[in-house]
Image 1 (cartoon, rainbow, N blue to C red):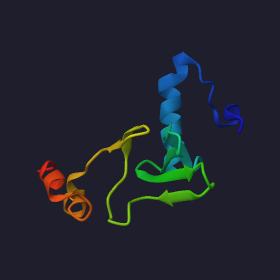
Image 2 (image 1 turned 180 degrees about the horizontal axis):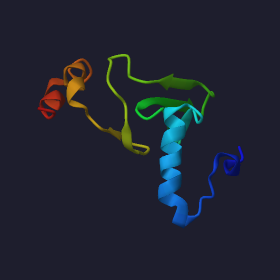
Image 3 (image 1 turned 30 degrees about the vertical axis):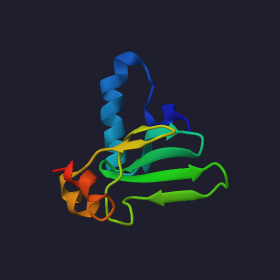
Image 4 (image 1 turned 60 degrees about the vertical axis):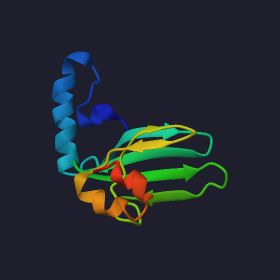
Length: 115
């Protein structure tokens, strides 16, 4: 992809102008998505793709067997937006509207910590 064709120079003094241009391209689907966050550990590569301005999807790639997992929410209907990811844990934003769904997956003592 040649960014110059779309009006991008990536020069520091054009940063604000090009940011606004990217927002417009996302709104009108000239650019279908952007790569928002990426993490990895020994087992997985992870990336968040944002479609438009608000619609995000998660992609995990398991290194061991090459299997990919692509989803917007978990099977428990929980939004998934990681903030930190390492060998031992994954930390996510907890949205208020998802609280009832966490009760399905957390032990009672952990669920109480959300209240």
